[in-house]
Length: 121
Image (cartoon, rainbow, N blue to C red):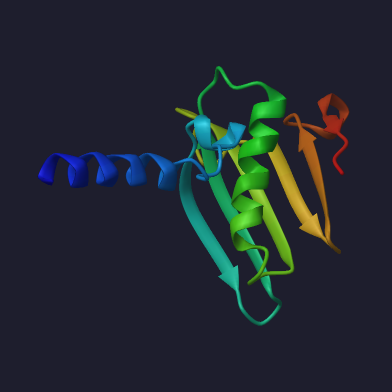
């Protein structure tokens, strides 16, 4: 009887885990949140994150969108500044991602002349 209950419990645990959502690409990649600067008066937020140098622009885009998705209920304007791990906070960001008016724009590159835009949605 105990053996049957143990098997039933084990099978229940496996079935319960079957509906767990699959991790997104951004969750698989490592990024660290360095700081967050909320402005409650304007409903805006600026977040600085760092990513490994090995990440590609689409992976950086996914990381920024993950941060935006977790905070867009509270803020209607979000700016994500992405820095490469090991670079100083005073240098230009590797990428800047912005949520404004419900759409996200990503700009890559330190200077506007060397920037690359990745369209989204």
